[in-house]
Length: 176
Image (cartoon, rainbow, N blue to C red):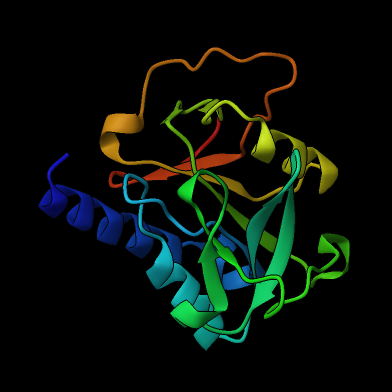
């Protein structure tokens, strides 16, 4: 994808998220801090902070994701962690228990490929599959996909977590 197409599709995807009833109902946003090749959801994070939502982003701790509430997107609160992913500094934002955050929670989930059945191909570590299971299989789990990341069918293993929706530049797709 060209940088211009990446920016355009990211903006379209964020607009779809911000117009969806799951966004309106959410009291907690569980998101990711994007890598350069992922959908840039920082406008959604900024909107969540402006709405005073509880906004959680992950930090890799061993084989798991540890969730941290953030209060801003100020660069000083983050560092480059595992796999080059921007993570909250542990000394700036303490880890929180996901189960004690306000519901409903809207999860934005990154990936490499998605299908419209809720299938998701991640980067191979299983971090989000484990995190979503540990969270008790939350109802609003949304894969965030550029148009080129949508495929007919993602092969799923028994340990893979099936998402409830996928959002792309074409809109919000409830898994079927």
